Structure formats: structure tokens, C-alpha cells
Length: 309
Ligand code: NAD
Image (cartoon, rainbow, N blue to C red):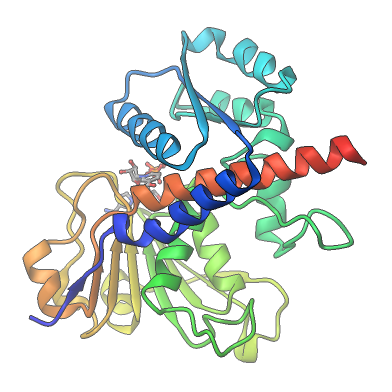
């Protein structure tokens, strides 16, 4: 078996080192507040990693637990506190549209997760900067951004092509089309030039920028394709199905593909996938946390610039 297994810890190292050096050299102390208002063990684990990584890099992290009905007031309090530079919430809280409302309550200038409508809109429309002078990059949601960094690390992005076109010619299947990860990820990768098959429980959509990347931002078309049609065509297969029993059929994976799992559950059969894939990334959580901190430092700087201007 010649498959290379690439761990998130290794991928996140350079980002964590860069953060640590920047924070130390500039003698700053950005503060991130995480709100935990659910009983989800995955959220508690994520909070644990966040605390650990923040301690290593020099970010001040405070976990605030509260009843879900108090969360809105607690977020507003943190929005108004100049000593808090970034805010994140461990979702799901209510598990319905109220969670989308809460995402908009977090002030846009402190939204480290990049879930505010402005960031999401800009991402879907391939608008990369917040200002006309192009000094402030948009905040990208952490898990999709982390997956982009994983793909850069393993060499799916082609560095000799210009930024914004570096996935030209790549075919990617993403099995998950949630609003938090799968759909934004499909848009980001298609905006960077990939042809993306976005699979969910109801069917497959294609995200692309057309032949020769003639479109400025991606477009989406419905297909009648099935998983068995798209997997053999895909250079990269990314999966995030939240089920312990779901397995991507290894026999359909293209020889030499890059296979990445972001689900809490193992969506690939580890032994079988290693017989087909060239690169297998079994989890990405640590890269997500590194992106969270990177977004925090960016927002810290924007807040500083706004105070000085
Ligand atoms: P979700 O429930 O909102 O979305 C699941 C998606 O998978 C939906 O699009 C659904 O249609 C699709 N799906 C489900 N079963 C399928 C099947 N059999 N075939 C094809 N598509 C199917 O979940 P989510 O918030 O996107 O989270 C998904 C997983 O990713 C969870 O395990 C979550 O814990 C994990 N997650 C990881 C990170 C990280 O940084 N590692 C971040 C966020 C979420």
C-alpha cells in the first residue's frame, strides 16, 4: 500500500507556529470568547481543542457556558465589550432557524467563524475583500477554509497557476451539502476553478465556473448523476456524513485520489481506502481550530485599524 496518511496535527503546525510567532513578536493578546449552550460532546471536545491550541499560541480563550435562552443576551454583552476581539458559538444550540438568527446576532467585526451574512454573501459571490482598497480580506468560515488549507498542503492546489484559478482542471466530490460546511466549501472550490460534484441525501449538484473558467464566480446546475457516476471521475473526495454507519464505497474511488474526511465519524473504511487513495486525511478538526485563531488575529487587526482611523 503506497497511500500516505496525512494528519491534521501536521497540517496545522505551520499555521500554529506562525500565529505563535506573530502574537509574540507583536506583543498582543487577542481574546476569543466561546459560548457553550448545548450538551453536545462533540462541541465540548471542540472547545477543549480550542482552549489547548489558544494556550499554545498565546490567544486568550474564555469558555462561557450558559442556558440557551440566555445566549442572545450574553452574545450582545460580548459584542459591546472592547476587550473581546472574537466570538464563537458551539452549534447546534436550538437546532433550527433560531441558530441562524443567533449567527447574525454576533457582531460582524467579531465573527471569527465567518457565519455572518456579509461574509457568506461575499464568499458565494467571490468577493474576496471587505474594502475597495483591498486591504481587508473577507473572513471565510473556519471548516471550509480549513479544508482549503488541507488541499493546499497535500498539493491539490496548483501553485504555478494564478491565485483564484489554482484548482482549474480538478474534479472534486463533496458528500455533504450543509449550510455550515458542504455548500460553502463547494462554492469556494468552484470559485478557485474546480468542477465540484456536491452530493447530499437528495441528489447531486455541479458547481463550476464554466469551460476555461470564463465565469467570474461559480454557477450551480442540477444533475441526475449518482454517487457511482461521480466518484470514479474525482481527483479529490471530501466527506462529512454525520452517521457512524455511512461508508464511502472504496471500490468506486479513483486510483490515486485524495480522500479527506471531516465528519466526526469515519466515513472511509481505513484499510480499504488506503488500497486506492494516494493521500488519506482521516480528520481535519485541528486545522479548523487553527483557522479560527487566524480569523481572530485578522479581526483583531481590523478592530485596531478601525479605532485608529
Ligand atoms: P448536517 O447534518 O447539517 O449535514 C449533513 C449533510 O450530509 C447534508 O447535506 C446531508 O444531506 C448529507 N448526507 C447525510 N447522509 C448522506 C448520505 N448518505 N449520502 C449523501 N449525503 C448525505 O451536518 P454538518 O453540520 O455539515 O456536519 C457534518 C459532520 O461534520 C458532523 O459529523 C460534524 O460533527 C462534522 N463537522 C466537523 C467539523 C470539523 O472541523 N472537523 C466542523 C463542522 C462539522
